[in-house]
Each structure stands twice: as structure tokens, then as C-alpha cells.
Image (cartoon, rainbow, N blue to C red; front, side, top):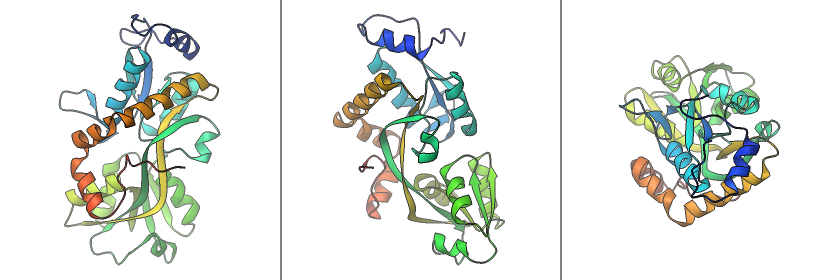
Length: 267
């Protein structure tokens, strides 16, 4: 039992969802997220989960006609939680990658972004190519695509993975790391919060797509999630989320000629 809800299997969930959406179902859609990544998923001043992905998860559950329960799990524990059945889906700014598709499935994307660099303010680094020469120390957040890319493409660098964004930022701010490889929104925000010690290099290293993760074989649920994402976009709901959580970032990216996150391109 999790809170006031029993966690039924996904097969039961999908059987229930296929019925009348007006009926009150006793089960819940259990969503895994790592609430350490504002403005997409974080804990607000009241101690409640908030953010783009939290609002998205609530809207998805409402569309399916079921209650929702969020489980706050460290990012590297999200996939094991999905595989064990502890959560039904993951909505946590998770990138759809070939490596991850070996152990889980993904919906259609709802965000297009890219990984880029946060570097020390006085660093001569101009691009990711500069990290491929000389003795470099690169920091990443554990289990992210920034870590995967760094280990695969920077064989001569020391790649150090941390549990939190703040630990990565501090390594760069104090000059102990040559770069942090992470997504554009986070890098831009942290650079604005640490303008005296850090600098953002937003040029995309690699484009990425964020999507809802779910177990293999849940084709009916996947179709329902994809239909929801399409309806949500057509109804202008992603624009509303941008205005609520990402207005400053949206305007900055558009001014720089960088496509905004919800302007999803075809994979």
C-alpha cells in the first residue's frame, strides 16, 4: 500500500482505463520522478512536488481517468524502479536513447533539447572539441546522457559523476573541473546564478528528446500516452507550461536563435 492507494499491476490499470472515464477507480497511476531538477521536477516551499513534468503527469492521469501518485526517486534508481514494478511510468526529463530502449520503452517525445557545457568563467574552452585534447577533468550528473556522452567521447579526460547538480556546478565554479556536460536549460540557469565564476556554452553537442518511459510490452498504454501528448500540444498546453515555468528561458533561447524545448522536431 502506497499512501491511500493500492498499487495495482499495469495490466489491471489498462483494463480499468478502457472503461468509462467518469467512474472513480480505486487504483492509481504511479509516476517515478527525481525531484531535484527545477523547473521540471522539484519540491516547492510547501514540500510538495511541482514543475513541468509534475503538471504533465497530473494531466496525463486526468486524461486516463485515474488518480496519480508520484514517487520521488534518485535518478539512477528510476529505471530499476520501473523494471521492478515499483512505478508504472517515469516522467523525469529522461532522454530517449538506444541504450535505455534495451530495458524500457518510450512514448513520443515532448521535449527537444541538447547537452552543452558549463565552464569556468576564465576558461579558454570554446567548444566540446577543446575537451578532447590535453589533460581534462569533466564532471557530470550520475546516470545522465551527459555522463554517457562524456565517457564515450572524452577517452583522455577524467570523468567524475556526482549525485547532484549543485555538486557539479561547484566543481566548475571553483575551477576544479574544466566543464560540466548537461542540458541547455540547466546550464543557462546555473550560469545566470553564478555569473562571476561560470560561463555557458549553449552550442548543442548532441540533440536529445525527452519522453515518458514505460515498460516494454505496454503498447496500449503507450498509445494512450502518445494520444495525450498530441492533444496536449494541439490544445496549447505546452505553451501554458512554458509561460508558467520557463518564460525567461524561452525568451532567451528565442533571442539566441535556439529552438525552444517544446518545439519538438521529428526523431
